[in-house]
Length: 464
Image (cartoon, rainbow, N blue to C red; front, side):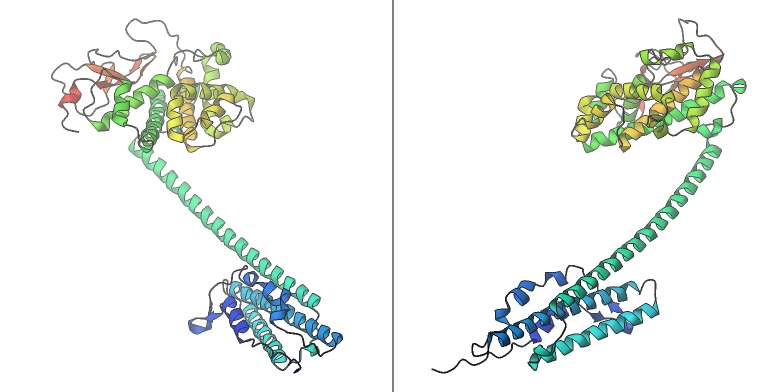
C-alpha cells in the first residue's frame, strides 16, 4: 500500500482577487482615488470558510508527528488572522485617504498612501511565505493579529464618524444661511406689503397707545384676521381635495339656499362658515365662555394691555403652558377648534381623531401644521377681540345694527352696511344677499361694513 502524499498547498490567487474586489481600489484621472469602501464589505467575507474550516486549505499528512501537524495548523491560523488584519488596515488607510481629499490635506494623503502600500507589501509577503511553505517562520500570533484587525476597524469607524460630523456641520451652516435668507425675504415682503397696503399688517400697530386708538387701527387688525381665516380655509379646501371630497357639494351644504355657479367662489362659503364659528359671541367680553368670566370685569386699559403683549408673542408661546396667564387663550383655542373642525372632517383628512383627542384631553396641543395654522387664526381673533374692547364705549342695544353684525339671507343689499365679496355685480338693479361672509363692526361713530355674498348677481357674472 502506497503511503499518502502530502497535499499540495492551494493557490492563493483566487483569494487575492477576492480581497482586490472587496477593496475596490481604483484610480481616476490625475491619480485621484475614486469609489467608497463600505465598512461592511470586509465583514462580508465568510471567515468560517477560511479559519473554521481549515481542512479545505490544509490536509494533514498522517506520517507527520502530532506536534508537526499542530505547528502547521497554527501557522495556517496565523496566516488567516494576519490576512484579515492586513485587509482591515488597508481599509482604514483607504478611508483616511478619502477623508483627506476634502478638505485637501497632502500630508495625510501621503501617510495614508504609504500605509496602503506597506500593507499591500505585507499581504504579498504572506502570500510568498505560504507558496514557499514557510508558514512556520511566521511569529505573529492569531490573537495579536485579531487585536490589530479590531484596532483598524475602530480607526475606520472613527474616520467615518468624523466625516459624518463634518458633513452634518456643513449642512447646518447651509441651513442657517438659508434661514437667514428666508428671514430677509420675509422682512422685504412685509416691507413691500406695508407700502402696497398700508395698515394691513399687525406691524402697523407697533408703538400704539390706548389714548391714540381710532377705528383705522381696528380695521388694520380686522384685515389681518380675515387674511388668516382665508389662509386656513385654503388649507381646509386642500385637505378636502386630498381626501377625495366633492368640494363643490360641501360648499353648497354650508348655505344650501344659495346657488353656486362659479367654482372660484367656493372659498366664500367656507370663509362664512369659519367666521360664524370664530366670531360667535364676539360682542361679549368673555366670549360667553364660563372659563373666561374674569374678563367680564376688565376695563379698556386691561384689554389693551393684553392686546399689546399678545401681539408680541408667537402662538406657540401662548400654548406651551409655561405661563398660567395664557391658560384662558388655550381653553379658547380648544373650544373653537372643537367647534370648527367636525370629527368626521378630521377623520377623513387624517384617518384618525388623534389631534381632536389631544385637544379635548389637554394639556398639550397637536404639533402639526394643520393645528398650527388654526391656532394662529385663533390668536388673531383673540387679538381683534382685545382691541375691540380697548375702545371707550358702551354697547347699547340697537335694533338696526349692533357692535358686531351680519345680514340675514335674502336681505336687500345696501352699500351703507355691506360690501360685496365678488368683484362684479350690477348696481343698476336690486341685489339680494345670499349670506354674510365676514361680519361688520361698529366702533364709536364709525361703521365697518360686513362682507356679503350676493345671491342673484352671481348669476350674471359669466361662466365658471
